Image 1: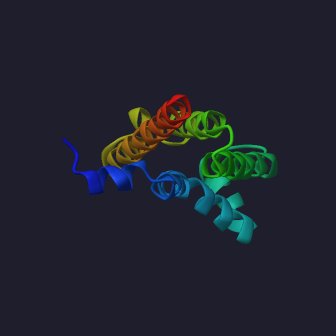
Image 2 (image 1 turned 45 degrees about the horizontal axis):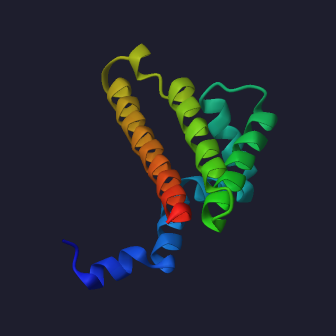
Length: 136
């Protein structure tokens, strides 16, 4: 059984907000980095062979900011988490194609894929918990 003081923390709206902020950090932080340094964002898009560069970067930043904003705001959390989850899956399938690589490059991209899968699991958990909190 969970101690009362732990339950109080876990049930707190502040903890729930903090979890949503932390769960989206990689997305809004990367979007912010790209917004503050467009050349960096374009270089990342080019690195992964995506074209056309500017529209891909704009769509990436849109998904990162809007998806994170929905999750953090608590409004349409399922949609924001879904946007970020699908974005992450597409990134895994297009940018981290470890199954086509050899050596250290393969290992690095495989590990990055594991991180992406973990992020998708976290986003799914956020969506599930938001739904559960709404029907309590």
